[in-house]
Image 1 (cartoon, one colour):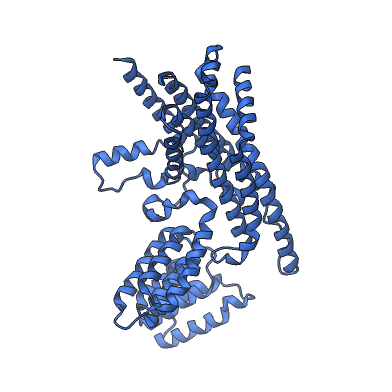
Image 2 (cartoon, one colour):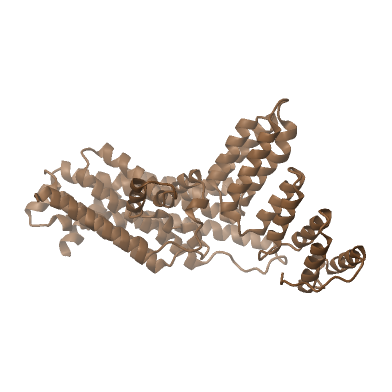
Length: 236
Length: 265
């Protein structure tokens, strides 16, 4: 083996050993970090900007107000993608972008604009946001609102409110709205069981928890069901 | 050790008088001070987080600019002015020369990081005090800024710049021109930040892509030096972070010293 080849082989061996030592032993990947598969590749390309990413996101957001006001769908979608790509860890840009696509642009866009395409784009954005905010109850509440009011999908909206209610830090109204949407689907027994499980967890002295309202709804459901319902089987 | 110290000292003296250092430092200080005027743009985050993120971003980019620019400058100056040849004829080993040059650049990066970080902390302190006074009675008055977090954030950015400087120094040992070394150095900065995207090919990827993915996994991961997370006390363990940087600095220095043996002087 000539010296040049030996030099390159030794260099490669050192590089492999150092890379393994650093990335697998000294500082293994953080378990709290989002799985790479769930992160859009475009978002990662902006990592090198570090703390300057929020500035880029804010400028894209300001530009977006102009394209949105003109009803320019393609321009708005591109700027929403830019803003969420720059700062995907902020729910603000995801939620605002989805609302624009699902509600505002549908009413502002030029005649002939494809309504179904806007809904698809909003749904796709919601799904991408999930990769970053799956553990955030406000993401699920936002999602439920869009599913309910823009897509008219009561079942999915109810499920999203349920997922929000089960996460730590969820506002109390997510659980109540899940029950309401179960009622709207005619699933009275499930709504009753859900509220029965919820009631003991509500602090009576916190007005946001609306413990009395939940009690009233349980009684209404029992009247509708025509009998006192069975005890719930599962814990909330 | 003494020879390494002498070369580091000479590199530090030469590089701190370079215009690029003074201009980068002044620009970074002005930009960090300017973040106060950008406060109204904090759409996606709180005001203090926005200012902190911007300040740390400026510090990161400025550090990278110096790590690439100054390293290329000092190395090519030494080869073109024949300082390297002179030093080698006096019995200095190539590894000692590389470590000495890197030591000087590392000192310079520290001299850049400290004043910018101090200014950022002062601005945040002033704004936090004002915000707490405005919200008196509504909040418990507890400060969000922690001196430890600020120091770890500064250390993370300094370590990241040191790893980049070591990688660029290795690059210089086989680069034919300054322009190539500068361009590739900045490219490395971008690629090292995209580490999470490079490492794992999809499940349907072929054997070549999988092997390539595992090889790319060996590159430094600059997202490990997350200054913003460190700033809020949520970053990686500083000791492990330092160890991570040391492993790569040692590997790149060793590779640079070996490559310098191959280089025609």
